[in-house]
Image 1 (tube, rainbow, N blue to C red):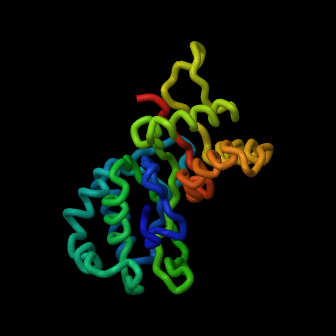
Image 2 (image 1 turned 90 degrees about the vertical axis):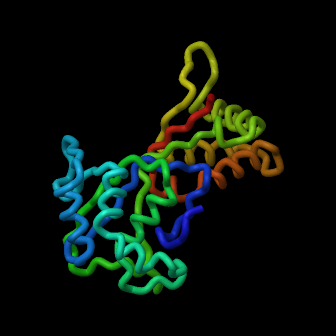
Image 3 (image 1 turned 180 degrees about the horizontal axis):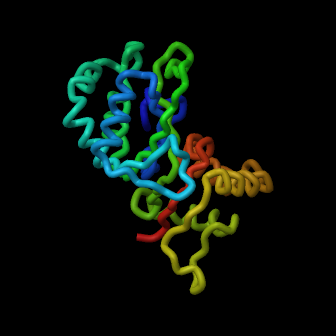
Length: 224
């Protein structure tokens, strides 16, 4: 699970975020330097209809810039427990921690905020909020055969995955809220003492609440 340092929601070990969405603030000194370095040194990915105050960068380029330009910022806070991070902790520390935690991440979407009142203090704690835009969930390789079979059964009954001649893909893609809604709707039709009712509760627990909150797009791998 990720640390609360990243926000108020945990991410279970089953989740491999591939694209993360973050906010940097132009009125914060360190954020402004990082934004400038990213725009100068990284290959900016431009997409049609993308907000002019946001851009994509590869995670490997973010990691390279942090390693070559901001090592002192990383070292300054690396020995402190996340429960007692000082108010002057920088975005650099959080981003480095995210790169270490989420080893499969491929891209960051950077939103540039110009707010004068921007703060990362929530309930007297310093947190770095982020959104999982796209995530991979490798049930085929991360779960037991019994759990995978149970997921195949449930996903078939809610109509998101089936194994037959006309559905040959070893994976499916779906928005997190759609998946959660379908699971919860089906669970509401079941006896609360039934095996399927508890199976769905276990699936929801392993997926975690953050994916639903962020409405991430999910790539769920069902076959090796």
